[in-house]
Length: 368
Ligand code: ZN
Ligand code: ZN
Ligand code: ZN
Image (cartoon, rainbow, N blue to C red; front, side, top):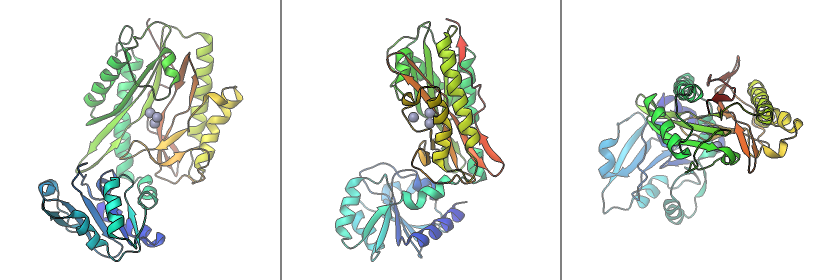
């Protein structure tokens, strides 16, 4: 798997005329090698020359954590009194263009720029992003496992098994997080719980507000599920619950949202530009009169990172390819009152869009 990824990477470097790729903290490195750099003040950097063997430069004390892959990279552990930037610079020279991981700490980029004055630096995401966006069968299977685990938590929420009334948003958020772990995730990435007027804020930070009768409770949660010997893959789902029977206005607006979400999923066929998928959802919401209440893009790619390429947004003309995995998550937000969002992870396949989340798409009603 990693050897095949390295081959695809080198082809992309060729096409884009990148002489060397530099990866540090962030998900590109584990995607390519299975090794995740510690986010330390000590530099870890994989140096991948276009036509030479890669070298993993890392703090000597981190070396025991590395699973050696001589077919992929050599090791250059550095000791406490050495200068790792000089070591990397020595491996890079005389590269004209270096692609450096987007999440690399600025301090290391600044030092590398002065050590390599004639090298042009570009973002590694321009090379690695499109490769990571196209999931292979094993990656789709990993995303499907994560989605199924998130679905089980969603079903518990919708079935009334997660106590809501009288609890604070923060308590419910912690509960959802525990359930994600119990269902097999090894890390909780987020658990937004937004009740009543707070549901009008898309990324509300769950707080002390107690959930009460008449609330819409918007829950958007996800985590990372480990895979054997490699990077983990993410889940991300949003479902809404109403405390007591929803009034007609809530039911009507939610029906618009549900139709918009389904339309965008159906539009997500191979070859369709990302922005056309966004438009499919937006048109329905705008036609119902809530266009200015859908205040964010329709979705984002997902994989080893919870947000990655491709972005389902107006202005992104990239056509969907088989293996692209992304969220479809339109929302309608009425400031000061309530809001709703509905989110599934979907994979574009030659046979059409494949939603990975199966949890019921209705607004669940739980006893007040
Ligand atoms: Zn979000
Ligand atoms: Zn989400
Ligand atoms: Zn999302």
